[in-house]
Image 1 (spheres, one colour):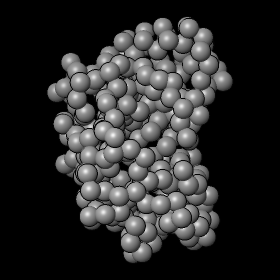
Image 2 (cartoon, one colour):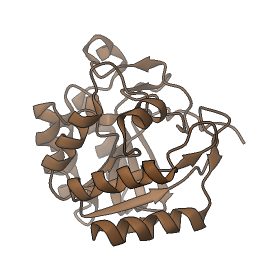
Image 3 (spheres, one colour):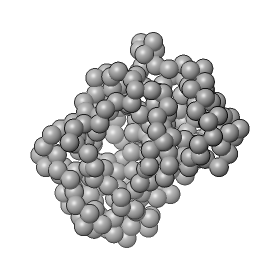
Image 4 (cartoon, helix red, strand yellow):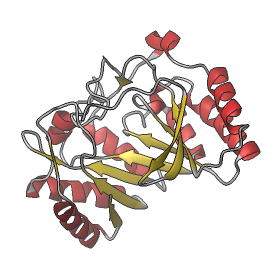
Length: 254
């Protein structure tokens, strides 16, 4: 098996998602290379080429609001039904400098063509301090936010954030956003977030943030860091049971 190829278009899919059913993807990042505010060791797209939270210098490589609007409208006019329209793709979607405007246009098109579909995001939670990002997130129907680690040390090793992204700031920002789903990836091997201490710290953060629910899973495809190993479902189930017992929050295993 090889790494997943980058999405080559703004709109992709629909894909059959374990968590979102039939999901139409929206990619706001470049189509020829990976741009992201994280450089996660488990990423299915491989290592991040442009590793930044500030993308204003890369605007020619990003789709405009009008381009996203036209591409999505053309697809929705075909009439194929989906369960979700999901911001995801080749990196963190919310770092697009006009993310809030794009969300507004996507919701208008959803309302017009497919009112049954929910508009969602798969986010790494890195940009929550930006006011327009927080505003845009509040407009979405479903906010699925990443939190893989219980300590800043594990965060630096596993997610490898861009400069100025601080773990504790991210935790506080996650707590401030209501009605979120936390999504966590567990890995083992030379780099791991499955030790007893790390899992206990992660549960403490979950309890503090108090999301609507938590979804946990492990590797499903090859990863950027080749020596990572998948955490088996039995271990994931034990993590979920403990987290649910200590936090009182529903934890699902995928």
